[in-house]
Picture 1: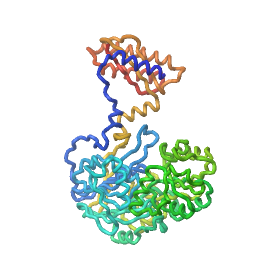
Picture 2: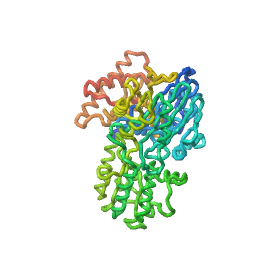
Picture 3: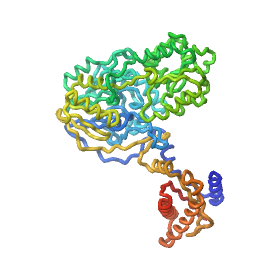
Picture 4: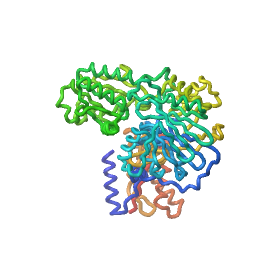
Length: 602
């Protein structure tokens, strides 16, 4: 097959005689788009102003786990809360991430008063580099640690100087246009997470952000239960509350329980210890550092994100370790096995992450050997289960002992289980509940908890991305309105709509293969024999018969069009031949491959 393709390439070069270069494909126009350049959008008409009403529109996070984002609109003021991404699903061929569709905000960007970021996880900040240019680089308001994490991401995209990040806290109110915002600390799997109360003349909402109730958190900073209680007593029209853990009974285990398990793992391991966790788990990383110090182990960092996050957290005072505890990976062979603790990324089986490189024996400084103990201090993100299982199997084959959550409590969620969610409802005492953050079944389970807690069924609203809910003088109405959000995907350096031809072509190739037909034409006649190549299309036993049939159908299509239309253009031939071949292949083989037709005039 490759020889056939080489023959086609050589034949085209020989025939064209220095003809003009072909246009770049639509794939290149997406993936190679200039870095940070805003998407081209049609010049919209002046967006309408909705008088005497507050409108809340989730644009991400309500039909998936990830890409959390929400818009809040009050007359001439617009606020955006969070801008995360979602990892691509298996059927999104070649896609890296999915980000929120911000077309509603772009059409009103002159009214945008700022972005509120509730915490520093990528499902809340990961979309920023791709949406900020289109929004005109509005101010970002967040807590100290999140500010550092955002700066690190923006620095990678050379956008730091374009964006003003303003650090806020839970002691002062923030006024942005007609919005009055008070934040309150919540416990999560990363420090400096918060929820907020937002007031406008039309009503009051509370958004929890991602939360759980942990009375022994890893960073030692408690949540603002008293402030939540006072907010609840003052009156709340709608509560938007995290639903990710709504199907799990009881309370979410404390970080102290996880810390105790990790401490045992460090004490009981005789050889090298490798711990993999998310680079944003700053509190847990501090615990691991403490355990290493107490057990006379040096810490070796493997993975760019964990190195940069630890440097940033140390600079801001969120991680405190003595000099000499953290060593460079190239020094690892200078220490005995029982003096080594490697802290690494890659718990989700990401192909290029440090732990995956260890599993494939491609790591520059460390080779897994019998006697190594590997702790996966993270649970698989939904959709990553197969990758994680393959990773664990590969590491075990190399002789490592694997410790994960099914063996020992080495990870806990940052999201509240059912009793946490009930506790939040009890504190906030909302009139209406909108479960957010998660798939529909998660949010439905959360809605049922709200009903158990005394909220009327008619006041529990199951929204989807793009739906609109409104408040007028404290009266809540679920609008029969949808701003029709799309899937916006990031591919390489660019972004585009999931429904674009590029992704449809990728899907066709993945499912049915590709057929490439090359014709020489002079006037309205074919010169010589057409050349057909295919990949992923037919089995070898079918190939010869199928290719002959394609050649025959292509010849008849050229003759048919020449007789039917006076002086057909090149693209007329390409379009007509493609249609004829598509019909032939579907009838004969019941397949729909991607079909490319190249015509060379001689």
